[in-house]
Image (cartoon, rainbow, N blue to C red; front, side):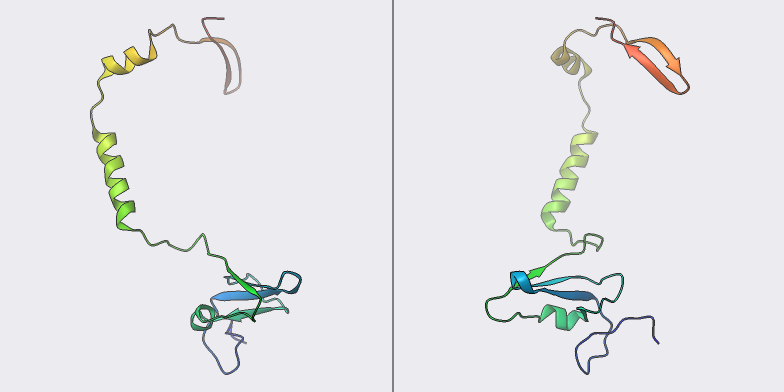
Length: 125
């Protein structure tokens, strides 16, 4: 037996890429990524059959996307990334940052230590 699961459609021998499950109580057909195991009440479909899937009249088709699959990036994503890099590379004026936060107080004081954990107390308290 071949380790590759095949499309459940009659006379189709292409490899399966999606799993179809019917939820009869909700009149819904759920098409999602290929299930880990072949289930007796689910249907494995190839790419062509999963794209062309239609449901009976009055039924809803829910298509779940695979979050682990690589996503296509748009021009907006690339532009947002470029803007973020420009912003990170822009030099910051330290005097303005310090003025916005107010005067710097003393550093926290270490009160106790247990292994790699430290208990710090604010110098204000």
